[in-house]
Image (cartoon, rainbow, N blue to C red):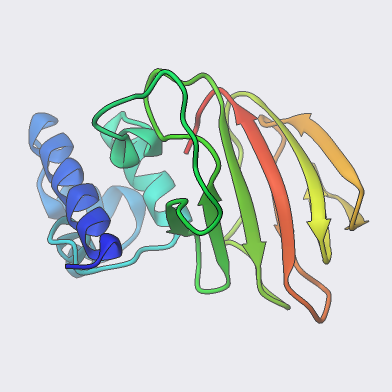
Length: 187
C-alpha cells in the first residue's frame, strides 16, 4: 500500500469518526456543504482525493480542523523532514501543499510549500480566523485579498489577516512555489 493510499484511508476514517460523533448522516453533511453523498462516501472509504476547499467545508461542518484529519499519531519534540519525504496534500487538481511541519492539534501554526501549476488555483475564496504570511520561492502568483489583486514574483513576500476573503492563482507559464504559514492552524 502506498503512503498516499494510507493517508487517504486514515483521513477517511477520521472523517467517518467525526461524522458519527456528531450523529450526522452522509446526506445531512452533503446537503450542508453542497456536495454529493457519493463524494463523502469516497472520502470516508479512502477512495477520493477531494480538493482542499471540500475538506475545509467538511471539517467546518464537523467542528474539527483539517489538521485533525492529517495529525501525526506521535508528535516529535523536533521534527526533521528531508527533501522528498514531506507529506503532500492535493488542494485541487492544480495545487499541492507540501507540509513543512507535522499536522498536529498541538501546533499553533501551519507551514506548507504551495506548489501551483501554471494557470492553477485552489477552489474559491477562503476566510477564517488568524494571520498568514508567505514568501514566493519560484514563479509568480496573483494574490487577491479583500478584492484587491497583487502580482507577486520570486523573492516577494506577503502577510494579511485571514478574516479577509482571499484567494490566489498562478498566472505565469511555470510552476509557482510559495512558503505559506498561517496561525492558528486552520487547515
